[in-house]
Length: 275
Ligand SMILES: NC(=O)C1=CN([C@@H]2O[C@H](COP(=O)(O)OP(=O)(O)OC[C@H]3O[C@@H](n4cnc5c(N)ncnc54)[C@H](O)[C@@H]3O)[C@@H](O)[C@H]2O)C=CC1
Ligand SMILES: O=C(O)[C@@H]1CCC=N1
Image (cartoon, rainbow, N blue to C red):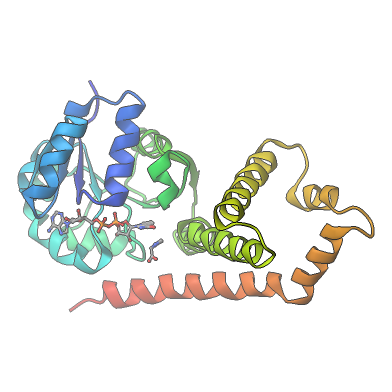
C-alpha cells in the first residue's frame, strides 16, 4: 500500500510536488493537503482528487510522511500547534522551507523525529525541478528512498551529507531559476535594442536557453568545451564572450551565490532563535 503523505501548506511548492506525484501514478487518495482557507482547498479536491482539509492535526493523524510546505516565517507557529499530533504519530518529516535547520524543526515539533530537509526549486512546477536533500541521523534507508521517490516526481534529486551544503544548493538551484530568468530578460532586451520585434526576441532567447541546457545535459563535453565549440576564432561569439569576461561575469556569479548562501545562514539564525 502507498505511504500516506500529508502536505502542510498547499501553495506553489506543495502543489508542484503532489501534482508531479499524481502524474507519475501515485494514488491521489494517499495524499492529503492542508491550507488555512477552504477556498484554496476545494479546487485541489476537484482537480487532483486528493484529501484536503484546514485541520492540520487531523491531516497528520494517519500520515507516514508530513511535508512541511508553509513559508518559513509561519513555520514555527504551524509546527508548535501540531506538536501533539506529530508526537503521537511520529511520521517522517520532510521540510521544503528555506533556511530552517533539521534540528530547529525537530525541536519545534517536540523532538526525536526523522527529519529530511529539502531545497527544491520552482521548475518543479513543470516537472523539471532540481532538489537538494539532507537527512538527519534518525532517517532510515527506506525513508530516504521514499523521499527520493516523492521529489523525483518533479525532477532531479541530489543528496548532501553535510546539512550546511544545503546553503550551496540554495545558492545554485533553489534560487538559481531567478538568475536564469534575469539572463532571459537581459538577452531579450538586448535583442530588442538590436531591432528585433519583442516577441521574436523573447522566443529566440528562451529557445536558445532551453537548447543550450538540453545540449549540455546530453553532451559528452563539459560546458566549457561546448562554449569553445560555438566560438569560431576571430568570430562573433569570441567577441561577445570576451566582453562578458572583461565585464566580470564570473565574479558577479561568485558574489551573488555567496550573498545567497549568507542569507540562508542569516535566515536560519533569525528564524531558528530560541525564545
Ligand atoms: N518559491 C520558491 O522558489 C521556493 C520555495 N521554497 C519553500 O517552499 C515553502 C513554500 O513556499 P511556496 O509554495 O512558494 O509558498 P505559498 O505561499 O505558495 O504556499 C504556502 C501555503 O501555506 C499555507 N499555509 C499558511 N499557513 C498555514 C497553516 N497554518 N496551516 C496550513 N497551511 C498554511 C498557505 O495557505 C499556502 O497555501 C517555503 O517554506 C519556501 O521557503 C523552497 C524552494 C524554492
Ligand atoms: O528566495 C527564497 O528565500 C526562496 C528559497 C529558494 C528560492 N526561493
